[in-house]
Image (cartoon, rainbow, N blue to C red; front, top):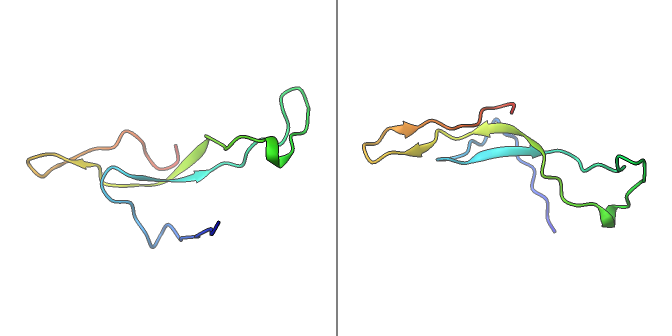
Length: 71
């Protein structure tokens, strides 16, 4: 699998898209058990890095996004 790294300042999302920075998965459970890499689930927590202008109405104006940078 190839990993592509982009600088967010040079690329911006279009429409109602967002760029996320995914947080690293927990290596230890709440009970203190260390989890190997093969047993860890994909992280579903992240931070919004960049937000597109929103979805376009029929009249041409943009509908604002519900999420903002930093959330």
